[in-house]
Length: 76
Image 1: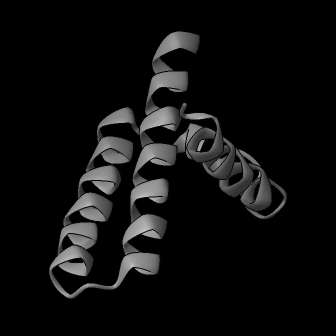
Image 2 (image 1 turned 45 degrees about the vertical axis):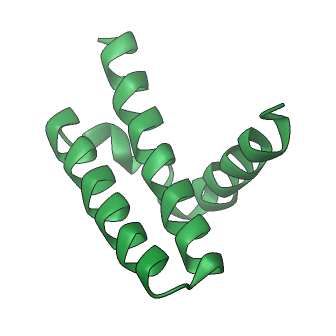
């Protein structure tokens, strides 16, 4: 059911991995969560402005930052 969406999230993370090289590991967990909040806020503005493509992009980014936060805590 969620396979297509999860695939998009993993593709986004993997696409940027070469560029960022896990620099998210240096960011405090609280800050990773804060970035996810910013992304979801911006997504809500995209929703109200009917910009579906950017809405989805921002939501995927938010989920990626939450995954990073979870990974940091699991690895700690």
